[in-house]
Image (cartoon, rainbow, N blue to C red; front, side, top):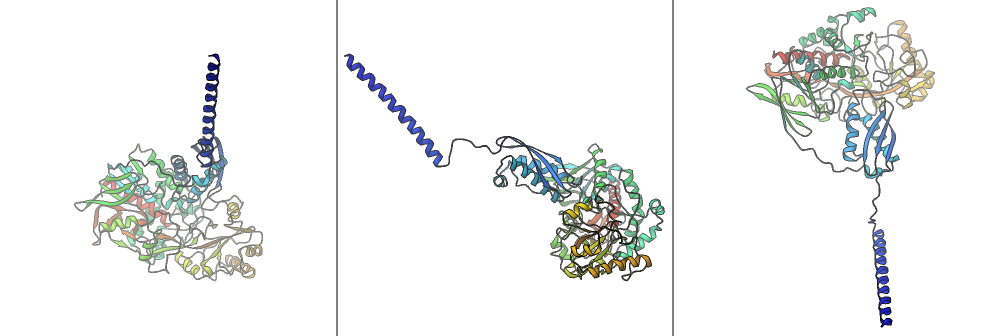
Amino acid sequence: MMRKRKLRALFSVMLIMFLLVSLIGCGQKDKDDSESSGTSTKTESTFKAGTYTGVGKGNNGDIKVEVEVDDDSILAINVLEHNETKGLSDAAFDEIPNTVIEGQTLAVDTVSGATNSSNGLIEAITEALKAAGGDINELSKNKATNETAREDKEYTTDVVVIGAGGAGLAAAVSAHENGAKVIVLEKMPQPGGNTIISGAAYNAVDPVRQSKQGIEDSVDKHYTQTYEGGDMKGDPELVRTLVENAYPTLQWLEGLGMEFTDEVFTVLGGLWPRAHKPVKPLGTGYIETYMSYIEKSNDEIQVLVNTEAKELIVENDVVVGVKAEGKNGNVVVNAKSVVMAAGGFGANVDMRNEYNSLWPDLTNLKTTNHPGATGDGIAMGEQVEANLVGMEYIQLLPMGDPETGSLSGNIEQGVENRIFVNKDGNRFVDEGARRDVMTKALMEQSDQTMWVIVDKHSYPTGDTKNNFNESIDDLVAAGRAYKADTLEDLAKQIGVDSASFVKAVEGFNNAVDAGTDEFGRTLFDQKLDTAPFYAGARVPTVHHTMGGLQINTDAQVLNKEGQVIKGLYAAGEVTGGIHGTNRLGGNALADVNTFGRIAGQNAAIGK
C-alpha cells in the first residue's frame, strides 16, 4: 500500500514537471516566433527624453531653437536666438512650432512672406530632433491631424477693409480715428503685404529735412516728375492729390509713432532726393506703427488673418459687406462701407501675361512681390462693374535677386554713389534714370545680368547694413556680394574684363568731377575711389502693377460710366490711374499711406 502511494506521488511530480517544461517551451517558442516575425512585444521609444538644441540658417543668420521631448512625443519648441527681421518673421515663429507639435511632424508648410525664416526654423527643429534620436524620415511624413470643426461666422461693423498691407492698415486706422469700428480681412497668415518687404522709401517734399541738406524741391516739382515720369498717362487730379498730401500723411505717421531718419535720399528711379528712410528695417516700421495703434483700439479694430475675401455684397446698388473664406469656415462681414486694399497682381503670372502688352513675355520672370499679390481685389471689383484703368502698365525693376527675384541682397544705398556694369565690365545706362529705362537697357545685356558697384562710402564698416537689414559682411560670406581692395581683384572675382571695368569706374569718377556724363546722368555724390570695393549681381524682376480699379480723389471706386459705386473705396496697388506708365521709386509708400488714409476717412464718414 505504501509502495503504491509512493509511485502515485512520484508520477504526480513528474507530470507537474512535464507541464512546466511544456509551458516554458511554448512561451519561448512564442517569443522566438514573435521576434522572427518582427512583432516584438517590447515598445520602442521614438526619442530619448530630454531637451535638445538645433541651429538652422535663416535669412539674416543662424536660428537657434530648444526642443523638449519625452519618449514618444515633441512637448515644446522654444526659439532661443535669431536675427530675423521683427514683424516679417513673426508669423513663422508663431505658427511653425505649434504646427510641428500639433501634428508631431516636420512636414509643415513655410509661412508665405517669410520663406527663408521658415526654412531656417524647420532646419533648426530638425537638427534638435535628430540629436534626440528621432527618425527624421518618419517625422518628415505627413500625418493625419484632428481637423478643427468648421464654423461659419458673421460680423457686423462700420467699415470692412480687404487687405492688411500698408494701404489697408492705413485705412483701418484712419477710419477708426473718424469714429468707425473696423474689421480687416487678410488672406495671408500675417499682416504686411508688399509694404513689409519693401525698401520702404517714402517720397515727400519735406521743407525741414531737405532745407538742412541744401536740397531745393517743391510740390510742383514732385507733381511734374510724377506726371511726366508716367508719360502723362496718370490722372492729373490723382497725382496732385498724392503729392500735396504725401508730407501731411508722413507727419500723420510720425504722430502715430513712426520714425524716419533725419536725411532724405534718392531712391532707385526716384529722380530726386526726397525719399524718407524709416528707422526700422524694410517696411516693418509702417506695419508695426499701425498694429500698435490697432492693439490699443479696445478691439474696435479687428484683423482676421487667414481669411480670404471672395465676393462683395451688394444691396440696392450699394456695397454693404464682404463674403470671405476663413481657415475654419465661411466668414460674412456686414458693413456700411468697404475699402478694397488687396494689392496688385505682380505674383499672378497668368494675369500679368493677360494684360502685358509692353514687355517681352513675363512668364519666367520672378517678382519682388509677396505670394498674395494675385489681383483678387481687381477681380472682385470687376464683379460689381468697377472700371479698370492702366492694366497694361506693369513695372519691372532692374534690381532683382538672381535666385529669388526679391529686393533682398541689393547692395546699393542710394542712387548717387553707385554704378552698374554688365558682364563685360562696361557701364550701359544712366543709373539715375526711370526704372523702365534702366530695365529695358538691362534686358539688352548679356544674360540680362548686371553688377552693382559701390565702395567704402556706402559701407564704412563690415557691419553696415543695406536697406533690407543685411550687413555687407554677411552678404559677402553668403556669396551674394563680393569684396576686394582693388578694382582689378574685384573684376577677377566677378568674372568681368579688368581693363574695361577699371575704365568704367574711372569714367564715372571723371563725370563726378565734370558734372556731366556720357550716359546723361545728372545725379552724383562721391567718386568710387575708396577701398574696399563691392559688387552684387542683379537681374530684371516684376515689381509693381500700375493698373487697377479707377478711383477719384476721395478714393471712391468708379464704374464703367464714371459714376461712384456707393459704399466702395479703394487704395494702394489695387487701384490704377495714379502712376501712369511708370511709377517713380519712393512714390508707392507715399501712395498707399496717403490714399489709404483718405479711403479710411471717407469710408467712416460715408462720403
